Image 1 (cartoon, rainbow, N blue to C red):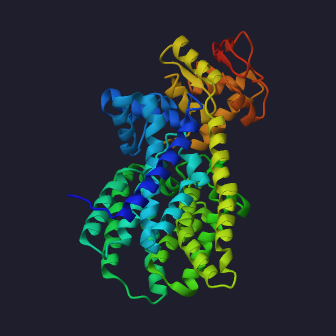
Image 2: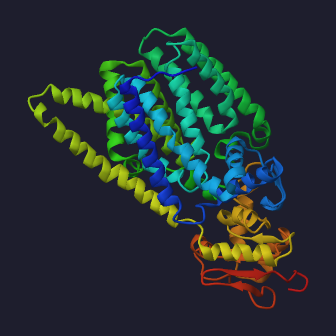
Image 3: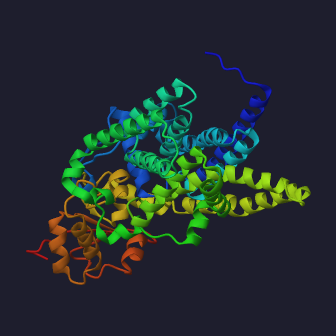
Length: 506
């Protein structure tokens, strides 16, 4: 099949490719400032990628996490990164591929914007706005995040849904993606939510129901829900309704599902996209009654409700909210310019456009750079890597190492040793008790109390870092002494102690 492009189409496609290269270049500028990754989840993903590369299979039955447990997750993203690692190595694939995938959203944003407005120049402006979404930029830049794949696929599905009335090929593509997307991430259940809210909005506005839309929404709903239940049936039966909160301990639940102030939303989403996206929804409600805007508004409404009820992880909720509002900023910009051209000061239109550009650069673009820089600064330090490598090279392979919850994946992924706990609590009993036990082993004053828990978890080594100091507000582990817990490793901010005593001879 040959594609024929007009000169105008070629021009905007070239500009879109240039925007893609700019986005990728900026991402690479930040991501290659460090040889490490940001967050323990990145190293857990990297471990899965390396295992797939060497064996062809992910690690579902993990002997290291929680000293032995079963993982339940969608491995499609891991397989994609692992495939490219065959040609460029795991490190380079993990640095490059997620950023390439995340940047492809620029093309999807352009397609949706063109479908909404039918204007290539304004669609390109929308793609530019979507290039610099602070929360999306920073969340996908150095974390090997599945969101790099989820967001482009999510909105590509929406794009095909917007075009189903134009050709059967878009119906087929939408159906095909409905079979693929549940294999990528359970977050696609929010696609179902948005589509169902869209049906409600259409009904409330007394608009004629498109039966093809209705059939496809019902098909997508039953298919995705059926697949999610089939794959995560064990989790549903094991945790019940708490599976919504990923079985997180109550002690850390608030950090994953918390309220966001208007100021924080402005900063994370971007001031201009936030205001203009809300304006587009307001205008749609009062004047235009555009079905396509209604669809995107449905996702904004659904995600906002879930964030308010704390039923969606904060990071994903903010990314979805930011992306939807950034796309809606395109129609809002078109409306503002059209209105400005009808006023007596229309000769100042270019000044107004420059003003909007300055506001966007000084907020969204600079905020994206600032968040990305912060993400790079939070990457693992050489001191931490050296300590984890020391554990790997100087401890028995069956050793159990105590660390903070946020460092658990680093123990299992870099040190290749058993951890007491990490951030993945799915299919784990008594997660709150385990969290409290980990905290107690760092904060207890008396050796006897600590030894009871140390024996309970068969701990051989204690990893004590600046993260533990900050998390538990301590300067040292008070019960540690040279006789029972000799210091076997020391650096500026990290100490490693070996556990040698038992309750009977402590």
